[in-house]
Length: 169
Image (tube, rainbow, N blue to C red):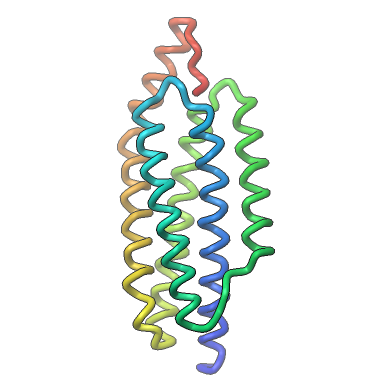
């Protein structure tokens, strides 16, 4: 029913806000540990700033609808992300596991923003589309960077391992 569309859209926005908090909880531990992959650290730092801006855009959209984000959803997804990061930190191939997880997460975010854009269109929330589209483009750009750089990261990891150097992060 059409009267459910605003509620569905707000739920989607709250989920996206929690998702971006989750992304921050994934990125920050990685940044604190990366030593041997400066190109990855630089791109993660840039994406952290983008993610913080994405959160602000989502908060602005929610505010325009007289709504707020869900603190509980934010906390729950952030806690889960922190645990996943801890699990990767113990792995000998941490940089690879992080690279795989980051690429998967970016594609998850892309799907979420594509869905939100459909909901915005169906619900007549035209004021939301610009911010959602900007978030989508940033996620697509990050996913593409990860895809393009996986070969370089893997090659560097293998070379460091073979040389007996620290290859984890």
